[in-house]
Length: 209
Image (tube, rainbow, N blue to C red; front, side, top):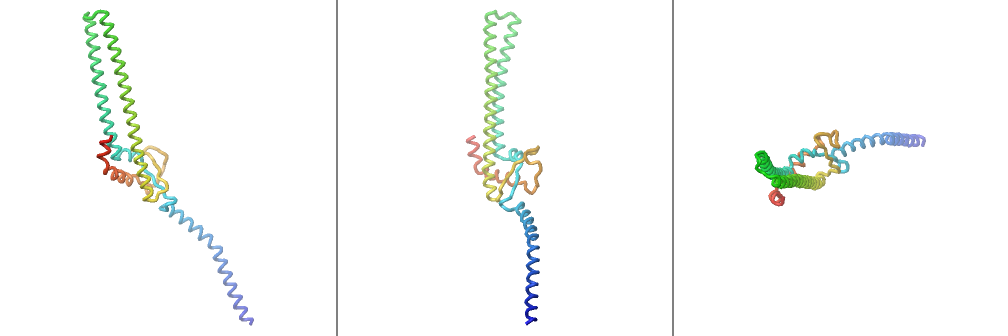
């Protein structure tokens, strides 16, 4: 009977020791597992997955942005040519008037009338310059918004496919991200996707714009 009791007590003691060891070692294991999980989350868990893109690179190399900028540059050239032509004609009139005045070929009343006309034309040219500049600036702003909305829409699709919770933006000089792990930089992947998606609608977009 005593022998049986000793065996049972021995088993109980061993069980207590095992439970004791499991109890005090489990929190440590749990902590280690949490750290591993945190690393895993940072690397690829949808709940914590973060990436970033360089907006300067996207704006400079996204075909949609490039096309809109080229169209805007052509409009700017047309506006500059129009303004230059108008200004040159006015300058020629001024030169002709000054030469005629030096030679005494213009009466005072004629001179007054010509000066009024030249002054009015000058004001019209200045107004044309302001109007053209304002129109180009407005078109630039609209073009920029179109590109940004296009990028944002694509990033919404991109984040769902790749399970990103956040996609941040940075610029070549500064930006909100002062440092970023290169492994989290998805700029090139996003750029390739943007250009591929745009390629299928490029003709229709260019005609519309």
